[in-house]
Amino acid sequence: MAFGLKKKDIQEWKSKIDQGELAFLTHYWIDDRFPGYKTVTKVGCNDLNHLIKWGKKHGLRPEWIHSRKDGYTHFDLIGEHQIKILQEEGLEEHIWERKKS
Image (cartoon, rainbow, N blue to C red; front, top):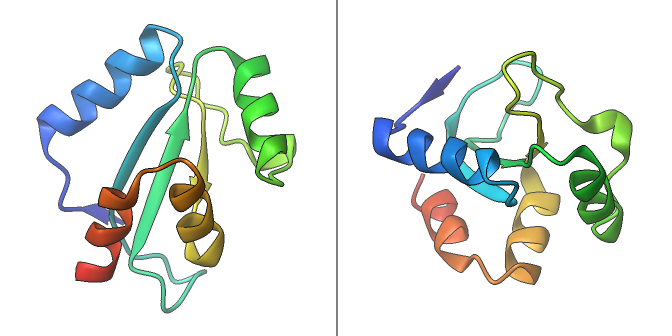
């Protein structure tokens, strides 16, 4: 279950994806399959090859991509992978949000 999202943030994430950019969206999240994790970062791009190449750079497998019919295909990052990748991408503000939870 996702929560704490602002409509503006979702629209900005989708807009970047629509423009072929990599887009990052971090939000609070609870899923019984992943106890102890409070946030997820969705990394999307409408250029699947670009998303796969980016994921491989960070040790992510193409089969981990969440393919969506609406075009907002993305990786879900949680836990230590989430922190490490956000640091490597220079997106510390997303890590701060995670620690706040």
